[in-house]
Structures are given as C-alpha cells and as structure tokens.
Length: 282
Ligand code: MG
Image (cartoon, rainbow, N blue to C red; front, side, top):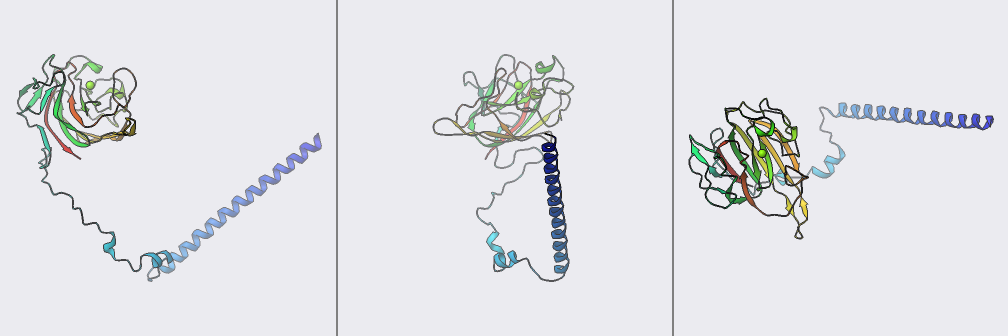
C-alpha cells in the first residue's frame, strides 16, 4: 500500500515537472517569436519591405475598389439645437395636436395646449399618434409638475410607448427613489438607465430615442427582438438595449406579433406636459 502511494507520488511529481518544462518552453518560444518580430519590424523601418500577405493580395489593387459612392446619404438640414431636422415628421410643434387621438376611442386628443406645450387633462386617458411607426428616431421633451405630489411611481409618472407597446418610463426621478428598473429612462421593469440624469421637477427634459422594431416570422413567432438607445438630456441612458417584450406592471414581458403601430403617451394621473415632438422613420 505504502509503495503504491510512493509510486503514485512519483508519477504525479514527474507529470508536474513535465508540465512546468512545457510551459517554460512555450513562454521562451513566445519571447523569442516576439523578439524576432520586433527585429524584423526594426529592420523594415525606413525601407519599403512589405509583409508577404500585402504583396500577394493588395499590391495591384486600386484604392477605388473599397470606396462606396452610391447610394449617397440624403442631404438634410439640421434643426437648430433640438428643433426638427428637415426630413422629420413633426408630431407636436407647440400648437397643433391634430396628429394625436385618444387611445380609448380614436377621437381627437383632448389634452390642453398652452404655452407651446400639451398637458394631460385628468381622466382623458392615454393618447396616441394617428400614424403608425416601426424603426424610428424620436425626439420628445417632457416636464413633470413643478408642484411635487406623491412619491415613487406616483410622482410625475407618464411613459413614451414605442409602437404602443414598449414603455420608456417618464417619471419625476429627481430625489424620488423608486425601483431602479421603473425610474425615468428605464425600459419599464426590464432595464434600468445607465445613470440618473434627471432635472428637477418643473424643468424641461429631453429624450432622443433610436428604436429598432422587433421582427416576426410569418407564423407569428419572434424573429428578432426590438432594440432601443435612449439619450436623456444629452446623456446616454440606454445603450442599444434589447427589449424582452411588452412592459407590463404585473407579470413578465412577452412578444406578440405586430406590424407598425402608433406612438403612445401614457396618462398615469399626473399632469405632465410634452413639447417639441418629432420623429424620423428609419
Ligand atoms: Mg409610466
């Protein structure tokens, strides 16, 4: 028994030694390779010597082969600061709410238009755009009430619903703790924002959203999920976040096949205001 243990000990000791030697050889080989590469580089500096691969593949190439001229990106005129660029669909310009209807019954939206903003009216409910959208770039400005009432989810709550289904939370998250994946700029109950860059209540804030709609197969199954990037007040808060499905208050996200759908704004019972809303179809 004892001699077997001794033999086993010897065998493992030998294997360890062999492994150590192999590792040392590999390291030395690496160092030698690096040195020889450095030496080659040193030698080639100042000379026109090229790597064999460059000579074989690219020596006779015309640089034009890697230039793309067509199609040319459309030339558009940028808006000043946060104003709509020339190819955007203006959804609210400070005066005209005709692009919006009540989600409940499709009648014209009855929010109050005042001082260049549209403000929720109690019990009117959610509103949505007349037009439907898929992939898009959206700019929207929002303001929570300057008179602070309530806390957590009850303070300055609204929401920007892409395709009426996927909520980017709007909330007064200035000194107002709530669950992280439900604060302003969260993908509601899915993804908390990278930072909290909220301004105080009563101040205007911006969302710039780049959204890629989900793709569905003919049989209704999900083919590719939606992705969203959100910039709040000029700061990245959602970085190409994958959306896992709809954004319910209770339960888990799910996808149900759909095509283009309207943009929806949530009435959560708090009198929020919105202004300068424009969208670019992508
Ligand atoms: Mg909300």
